[in-house]
Amino acid sequence: MKLTQKLKNQLWWLIITVDYNYSRICIADHEINGEILILWLEDKHDFKNSLDDCLQVDIPLKQFAKVIKTENLNSYEGTKVHPTKKYVYKDRIEINKPIKWYQEDASTTEQQWARESMLKSILTQLVETEVYDGSNDEMLFV
Image (cartoon, rainbow, N blue to C red; front, top):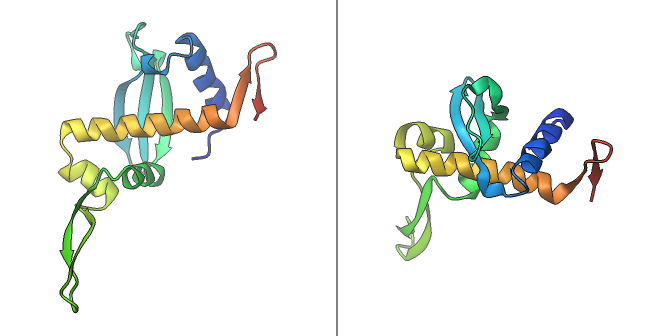
């Protein structure tokens, strides 16, 4: 996912505020609006009174779908029978397309796992590709 410089700076600010303890970053709320998944992030130790005080992250549904598929959240391992040769083999069986699965098939817990996987993916990408240098408020590429 392509992160804007402004979003990178905001995410680094949130990471610094939680003393680099990523488990303190939580999703305060979420919404799907058209082709965008919106996550509002906050510090678990400093809950906000309003979503306006949280960090808003807009994620294209295409990116969210990639994470769901990569994490195998919309599928399970099962056995299939080859249509012509009639032998049995193990394979991933897709329950539904990623976004359709999220909206129609996933339980509340599975939806939460999908959103948390998206958050983890964003934070991992940020941390693995950049280092924050607080002295001059700029990012240094690794």
